[in-house]
Amino acid sequence: MENLPSISDMTLGDILFANALSPLWPLVIARPLKLFPKTLGLTPGVEGVPSREYMVRVLSDYPTHQAMLRALTGDHFASFVNHVRGKHRISPTTLKAIAGRFGSNVGPNEIAAMVHGSSNGPLLPALLSLCGLFEAVPNLFFAKVVKAGIPCPHCGGNLIDDRDVWWTKQPLTLPKPTYDLVERMLGAILVGTGFYAYFKNVDREAFLDHIVQLAEPSKHPFGNWIENVKQSRGAASYFDLCTASADGTLLPFDENRLSKWASGGELLPLALGGRLIAGLPDAPALELDLYAARAIAFVLDLVIAATPGATAPKRKTAQDKIFRRLRTLHDHAILFIRAAQKKAQERATGQPVVS
Image 1 (cartoon, helix red, strand yellow):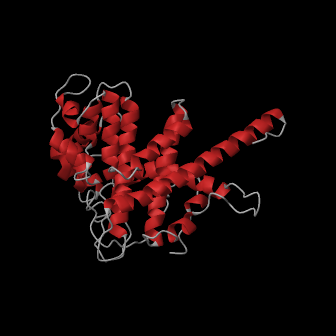
Image 2 (cartoon, helix red, strand yellow):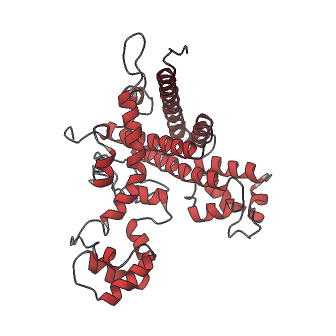
Image 3 (cartoon, helix red, strand yellow):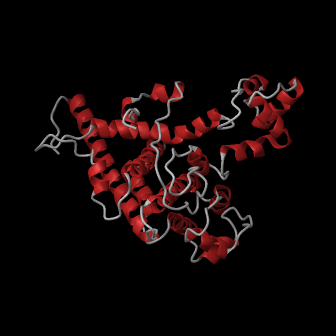
C-alpha cells in the first residue's frame, strides 16, 4: 500500500491521457451499503479494492456500467460482449448497427477499437475510466490545493492539510483507507461545484455553502434536496409537489414515494428527480444539486457500512460527521481562494494587500 502513488503527485495529463486514475486503497466494510448495495463490489468482513462502479451509480440510474451498456446496445448486447472480449469477429453490418446505438458521434471504427480481448474484468474499462474522471479530475485539483497549502503565520505548518488529524480525533472512528475515499469524494464534490459556479459566473462562496447544506444531518441528503425543490416551486407539502411538475406534466409518483426518497429509504433516481424539477428556472442548478446529493448519500452509505463494530451507527450520527468534515473542507477552500485572490491583486498592483 505504501508504494501507491498519491494523486497530488499526478498531473492532469496523467489522468486524461495515460488512463492513470488515482488508485483506490483496499478497505473493509462491516455491513452492506443500503442505497448502493453492490456498488463497491465488496463482501462484509473481507478486505478488497473497491470497484470503480460507484461513480457509475452516482452519475447514472444504472447499477453498473455493464447494465448501462446492455440498455444501450439492446438486442445487440451479446454480440457486443463477444466483440469487445475478443471471442469472435462481428460482421460490418452488426458493427454498424451497434455504432448506431451509441449515437451519431460514434462510428463502426470506434466500436471496432473497443476490443480489449480480456475474458474477465470490466466489460468496457474505458467507460469506467470515463465515469472515474468525474471524481479524479476534481480530486486532482483538490489534492493540489491541499499540497500547495496555506502556511500558518506562527509555525509555518499547512493550515489546510489536516485530514489524518481530523479523522483520528472523531469519536466515530473509520479506518484510514475508508476515510481516504470519503475525503476524495467530498473534495471532488466541492471542486466540481466550484467549477460550476465559476463557469456560471455565480458567487462561489455562496454556492459552495449551499452544497454543504445538502449534508445537514437533520434530514437525509435527498430530503434536503427535495426541500430545495419545494422552496423553488413554492410548494407547501409533498402532496402539492407531486400534483404536477412546473411545466405542467403529470408526475409518475406520489407523496409516499417522495417521502421514502426524502428519508433515505430508497435511492432517488436521476430521471425522476429530473421530472420533479422540469420547467423550473433554476432547474440546471437543482440538477447539479441532485448529483451532489447522490454523491453525499453514497459517502453516507459508505461511512455507515465501514464503521467497525457489531452495530451500525445511526444515520444522523454518521451524517453529522460528514457534514462537519464537508464544512471544514469548505472553509479550507474559501481560505485558499481568498489567499489566491490576495496574491493576484498584489501582483497586479505591486502593493501589499492588508487582510
